[in-house]
Image 1 (spheres, rainbow, N blue to C red):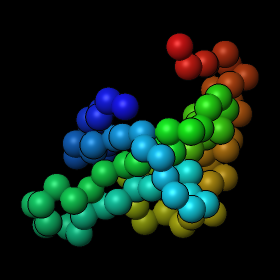
Image 2: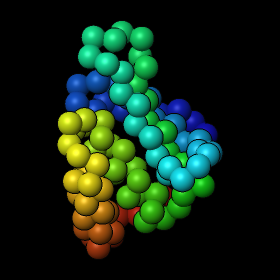
Image 3: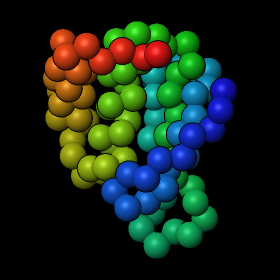
Length: 93
């Protein structure tokens, strides 16, 4: 799939859909502050569809935007936002 690049929290993040192994549906890799190697990226499981894909996309975005927020909070907020956007009619083209 195509590699996307998005600005999140004043930083350009490579965003790619790949076949992830194991139980993870998404990963946000953040380089250490001051690391100029560009080692940060977001990976989303390419096998996801529909509402679950949207929830994982939101989840990984929130990790990139707010790296210090706890996993359980990120999970709860991404689930809420997914529910709201779905209720408002947002769908993938």
